[in-house]
Length: 155
Image 1 (tube, rainbow, N blue to C red):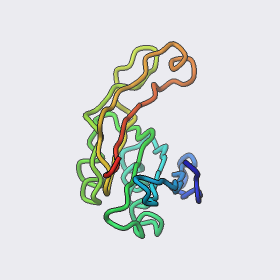
Image 2 (image 1 turned 30 degrees about the horizontal axis):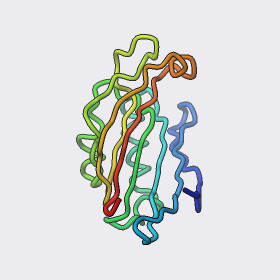
Image 3 (image 1 turned 90 degrees about the vertical axis):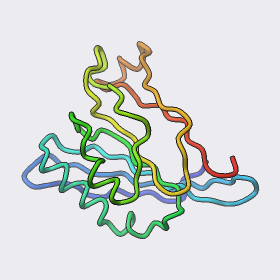
Image 4 (image 1 turned 60 degrees about the vertical axis):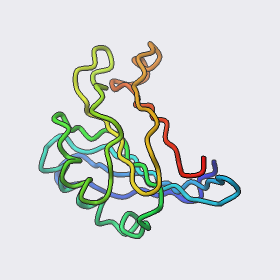
């Protein structure tokens, strides 16, 4: 599916490490109907207060705010959310739903923490979520990848 636009959203909280969100809009054709899918990928900071500020900035960003309620949206990445509680307040109040329960993705060699997550919004549903435990996945990163099958209406 072609990417029709992309840009970075700065989420840096000074004096902490630079952080951001990558936004991409993907063109889809489902049942002869053109749709767009908004995708956001984040790598949030290590401190709890920092992550909350970063998510508030993302949700207040014009790109996110301008999405129509029905537009399918996927937000995923490294939330560094050890207790998996960021989504309960901020993201759910913004109309996003967590895909499945917490999946242990960190560290890759012996996953014990659910630092990574996927959230969806708009007209999109979860079919399945898992993480890869392939040796190649363990070599590629210190986090295991989340794998989700998502479905839009009409698929």
